[in-house]
Length: 228
Image 1 (spheres, rainbow, N blue to C red):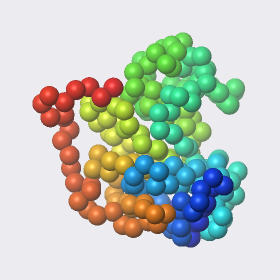
Image 2 (tube, one colour):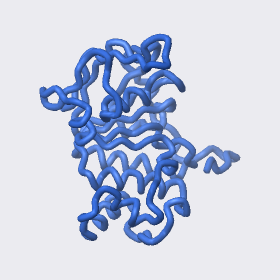
Image 3 (spheres, rainbow, N blue to C red):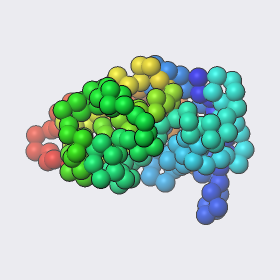
């Protein structure tokens, strides 16, 4: 189980803390989310958990053991908002094997099947993929590391309704055997995927009201266009 105890964080460029006394717990099979407006500190929270920054105060623990930043980077897989902007490989195959020179083809095929990309060409350029395929590729890159915690920053941003549903179904499957935390400004989209969460406001967490996790339409209302 991942546990945050009393995290406080104030970036050098901020006039006040973006996180104040933040505490929460995450367990495998019990996905959670943190909702909040743009600029509320949601991404900063993921960066702290994922080991890209250190809190000014507080602790991050895994099964009761305090973790440093390096240990958190090994433990967690972090998928940023619009992950396609962070692709480095010239092909899908290169992107998957970055940092995994000895990775066998069987492992790659297994992960691609897991995220629904079994039929994709490894020679194809990542930027030529559809938006939904790019999100799945970003997830595959992290799953190859076999993280115990999966951190997702606005995983449905910029996707049309059909692709959103596909990504949400995938997240529901991936959360069964690992801890999963989503940060989003649209908590209603994750009804049926997460089992509760928190609202982040002025650096503090408060329980998310159930009304924010009520089921939503699975298809867009008539007249709604393609969101990309």
